[in-house]
Image (cartoon, rainbow, N blue to C red; front, side, top):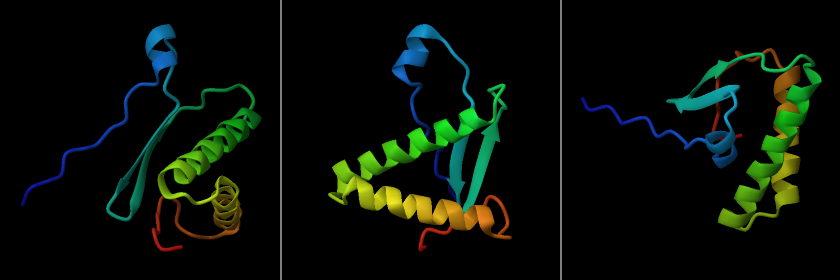
Length: 98
């Protein structure tokens, strides 16, 4: 049985040039989410800004790659984000068909 190699992203250019610290790494392994995190900020509200920025960038990627309007993608992300935060679901489970 052969295993697929891990497909990692590159280091962001600003971090490569100026230094910094990686705060989050996430991978989908089968139907599970595998993550490594570090606190990174004194104020947890900064994580809200980080997650919002990531959501906006994901929406832009979907817009450029699929033609789906960024606003529609962002609305869908927000819908599932809110539902998952309110859910009793097991953390770390990724369901592709939501």
